[in-house]
Length: 219
Image 1: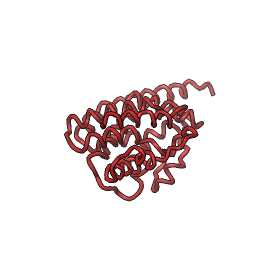
Image 2: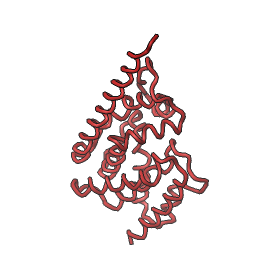
Image 3: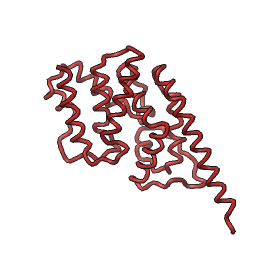
Image 4: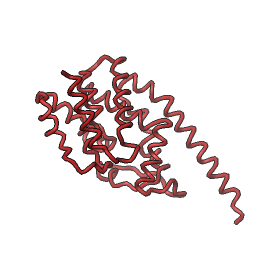
C-alpha cells in the first residue's frame, strides 16, 4: 500500500518541480530522501513512511521555488491520496517547519520525523553539493558572488531572511556555516562534520585567491 502512495507522490513532486532551478529540483529531493532514510536506519526513531513522504514533499510551497503552473495544494493532494488525518497533519507540520527561515520564528516542537527530514535537508546544503547549490541559486537570483566590505547580515524574523539579497559568500556566514550546530540527530551531527570542514576549506581558498588578486592590483 505505502509503495503505491510513494510512487504517486514521486510523480506529484516531479510535476511540481518541473523546470525548477537545479539546486531545488528532483535530484535535491532524491538526495534528501536518501539522506533521511539513512539517518532513520541508524536512529530508529519516528515513522519511516512519514519520514520518506516528508522528504519527498518538503519543498512543496517553498518561497524560493517558482513552481510549475499546476495545482500543488499539498493538503488537497494528501486528502486525495487517501491518507489519514494524523498522517496529513504530520506531513504538513514537516513542510511548515523544515525551512531554515523558521529558526527566526517561534521555536517549534521537536518531532522525530521533522528532526530527521530537517537534518537530511540541511546536509544537502553543506559540503561540495551545498557549495554548488549555493552558487547556482545565487546566480539564478542575480546575487553577487561576493561584495568586499559588505558584512553578513543578522536576521531577526523569517520575513527579513526571506527578502535577503546577500552575496553568495555572505550566505555561508548567514546560514551554511551555522547548520552543523543546528543538527537534531547524532547521525546528522556526525555527517555534518566533514561537510562543514569542506566549506571552511573552500572559503579559506576563496579568500586566499581574492586577496592575491587584490595584492596584484597595479593601482
